[in-house]
Length: 238
Length: 189
Image 1 (cartoon, chains in turn yellow, orange):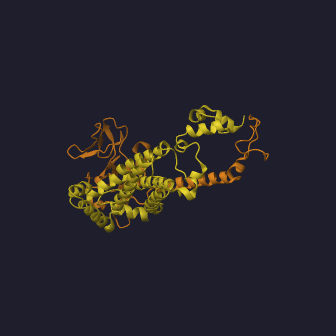
Image 2 (cartoon, rainbow over the protein chains, first blue to last red):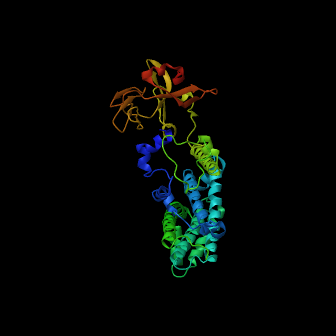
Image 3 (cartoon, rainbow over the protein chains, first blue to last red):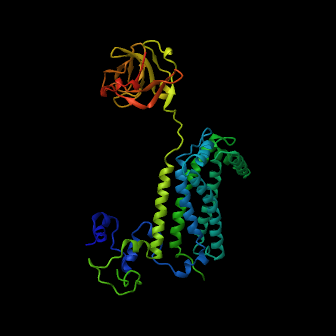
């Protein structure tokens, strides 16, 4: 018995992977169906529907960028304290003295820019190919909510370096919230937790950026991907 | 290592599987096809990123106080003086006391040798007292009551060039190991 067979026959391996190696058609299907990561993708897709010239892969790229932002963001959180005393200094320290800190910070920043661009292109592609039409109209609505959350992630992350650009950008942005009818000044007050941009706003934006919005976006993404399957699979060229 | 296996399409007639099925070498699997090459590059990139992330987690700059610091001149310490002003920042008492009949200035680590709480100097009773479980130590650091199993530890202390005492908290000396006779653990007066 070869080493590979011994590993594949061990109790440890068989407790994780329930099926024999994917050497025939049935087991290839089973491997995809019973694996958490692989089952996100359908077992079979029409070849013409995944042509790059048709999908641009922009939805996939957006999801990939979200994963990049999550991983780099969690790492940045190890060195960042959202307080008046430390926020700006921790950002400078990440740039100047932490090993690989500059790489991670720039990946996070440029990844955020790229994610906004990718999500717009994804929306444009879905519009141009008519993929928003019935039965997919609800998934378009979910996608619009995800677009808004992506923009809010960028907006809340903008404050965290706590330099002049951040503070005045969020001052302007929250004044725009105040321009809304009836609830305008209340929504600004809730957003900032104070009458002007200060430590309370920094803490609120930090929690929104690192916890609240990513959780909401994660839930809506699961719904978005699930609805693709339930609405008849990926839309193909007519 | 025959060429007739491995890259056949799914519809090929089934091959007899079994312990004598031919295997490809590891290197052929890793570099022998575009798919293998892709996964090899994928794995290598992940390995590099994991190493970079591990290095990222090690800080290069610490906000802690330095290991060596000056605590004044020997003349600032009259006999039986227990200086408490360095405890807050450095966790150190600088004491002019006696050990085995010799007058010395030494730096005691303020951490209790029982379970690591921070002891307090009680000037009225001339003892270090641990608030957690009641261990007590004389001003020379020797334990005499409570559960502490051994005396407080000393840090390295020396006379710096300009005549000030300098404590180095990167080295410790334990009485029960006989290390308090090391001249680096005290300054004779």
